[in-house]
Each structure stands twice: as C-alpha cells, then as structure tokens.
Length: 345
Ligand code: AMP
Ligand code: MG
Image 1 (tube, rainbow, N blue to C red):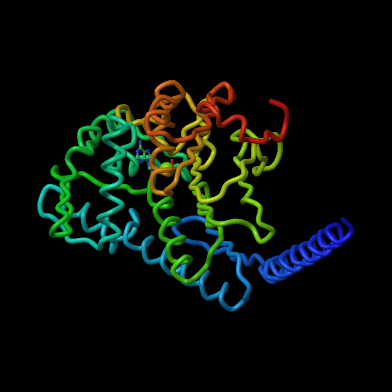
Image 2: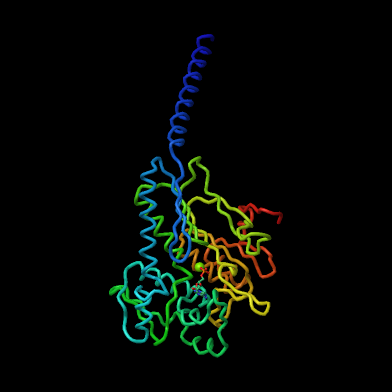
C-alpha cells in the first residue's frame, strides 16, 4: 500500500516539475516577443503597421516592406494622379482597353463584384460625380452638374479582360474611383507581405480599414476600437471595442470628409442614384475575413441605409454595426454580445 502511494507521489512530483518546465519554456519565448509599431503617411491617410517579433531588426524590415507594397499599390490606383493605372483607364474611357498590373485588375474585379452584389449601391464608376464635389473647399455642385454626370455612373459598363489584363470603361467620360475599396485591399497586401517575411502576428490600420492576424505577445486577441461618429469632445472617442484574431474591420463614416452648409452635412459617401451624400447612416462597420470586402461592403451598406444594408450584410454573412442617423446602434445578430460598449448601451 505504502509502496503504491510513494510511487504515486513520485509520479505527481515528476509531473509537476514537467509542467513547470513547459510553462517556463513557453513563457520565456513569449517574453522575448514584443510589439513594434510604425506610422507613415500613405494613400492620402496615416497607415500604422504593428508587428509581433522577437527581433527589432526583423520587425523593422518587415514593416518597411509592408509600407513599400502599399505605397506601390497606392500609386497604381491613385484617382488623382496622372500616371496611375486608374488615370490611364479613365483617360481611355470609351476608346481603348488599357493594360494594367495584376493588383489593379484584381481590385477592379472585386469592386465590380461588390457593385453587382449591392445592386450598384457601391459603384466604383462614381468618379465623374466625386470630381464635382470638394469637401475641403466646401463645394456643393449644382443639381444640373450632378445630373449631367449620373449617366456615366454604371459599373455594368466596366469591361474586364482577365486574359489580357486589360480594363475598358465603355462610355467616353466614365471614370473609376477606387477610393471606396483601395485601402482595404492595400491592408490585405500589407498583411500578405508581413506573413511572407515570417511575421506571425500583427495589425495594419489604414484610417478606417484594419486587418488583424495572430495574437498579441501575451497570447490575447487584438482589441479594436470602433469610433463614435458623433464624439462628445475631441475626435477620437471610442463607441465600442471588439477582440479579433484573423479579421478585417472597415468603417465608413460621414465624419471622415464632410462640410456643413445650410445646416446639412455633406459628406464623401455618395448615392450613385442621386449623386448626393447617402442619408440614413452616420457610420457603418463591417467585419469579415478580407480587407477588400470589408472596405467595399462598408461603403455599400452605408449607401443602402440601415434596413437594406443590414440585409445585405446578413446575406453576405458579414458582421456589421450601423449607427443610424438618429444615433441608434444596430448590429447583425450575435455581434452585440461580442462588443464592449464604452458608455452604457
Ligand atoms: P469609404 O470611406 O471606404 O466608405 O469610401 C469613400 C470613398 O469612396 C469616397 O471618398 C469616394 O472616393 C468613393 N465613393 C463615394 N461614394 C461611393 C459609392 N457609392 N461607391 C463606391 N465608391 C464611392
Ligand atoms: Mg469603403
């Protein structure tokens, strides 16, 4: 009897020692990991890349590579530059197909896909109407000017030739503006670049477009804040936070680029049917797997408004949080339980 008990005690002691050793080894390697973070002005906004690494040099090199991937892509799809792929497509609208780089082709393909899924609420051919508005100079175009451009807005007139890697806009005067999808796609590219560099965990944030992957050094998920579209004071009040692993989060808001005129808020998310800012939402956050879809669908849901927008998100199996024009928070089923609201609700 005693012999058995001694044997058991020995085994237990041995087991305890083993468990202690395992914890010591794993926590040692964990403690070597740290987060490294850098911010750069890119694609008309500030982009922050955070990585978890056991080496400052590795982290720095990976972050720089992610930035240059985004920078290169940003140059290809810049609506306002003269030398981008997009400018070349726009110059040749109604005339000739333009050969573009694979990333440009893919982002246009995805944009056309989301346009079709949203019945044209998201429409990347909104360019001619976008050009009429100036949210910095507070320029509200005339109704006639808007009407004269609306005929040019139709994603069904984007001709994509995959084999030859070309894009043609069928009508003369049509213009692609990838502003509603480019940052999300760029965040995807950055994450791919970081992973190719051996980075296992990190976070890429391009304004309202965020991609997370892996975990924080302590093993916990990333904690992402969703902005309050009408902050009490300052500009960065958080409405709610959510813990995420490998995800994409995108927020479209009427507070990002806007001006006030005659008591009305004129903002940068336009309804392709009217050419005027879409009403019904203050902000829309979409959570899904890829940045390119989170970005385009958050714009689409915003344009559709709370009711139809929620339905689209549910059909596409995406989680969404909408703050409507009365400040009411609406979410897809199940999302509310995962959110931590900062103040009441
Ligand atoms: P986001 O901040 O992602 O919602 O994108 C807004 C940007 O997308 C605007 O600044 C325009 O460049 C462009 N845009 C505006 N309205 C639309 C729309 N209905 N569909 C696609 N892109 C749009
Ligand atoms: Mg968007």
